Image (cartoon, rainbow, N blue to C red; front, side, top):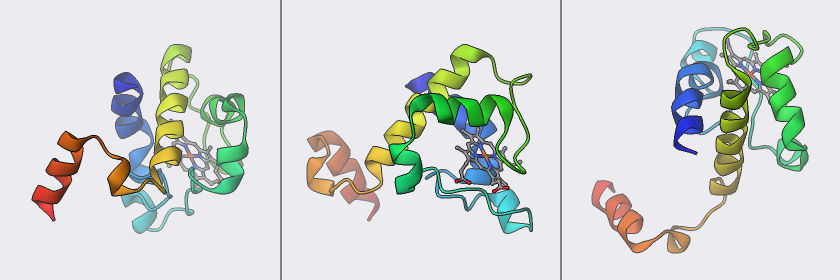
Length: 106
Ligand code: HEC
């Protein structure tokens, strides 16, 4: 999961944003809006479809198979699942230490 978070930050955040909803910095500068990875459509999609989008591209998104090795693609898929789960998570569901850290920055 840590590896996936690290690779996601490098390869996906510029377009899809830190939260996966598609509002990355590149999109803010005029590129085609990147899809929302946390939408119901992608939550319901099998992991292999997310993997396939990374490897083969998706409509106007370029394939990244030559940049991201297979094991890292799966790590990114796992992290995308975590982003999907966290989207509607309540603060009460966080472990106490994480909740305290969140309260500290509010
Ligand atoms: C250079 C920008 C860019 C990068 C980097 C990028 N994407 Fe995308 N991605 C896009 C765009 C743009 C679309 C929408 C393509 C379209 O609709 O024509 C998209 C679409 C997708 C979709 C389909 C979502 C949907 O419904 O439109 C998935 C899944 C996806 N990307 C995953 C990823 C993952 C995972 C990474 C990191 C490994 C990544 N992308 C990196 C630009 C990017």
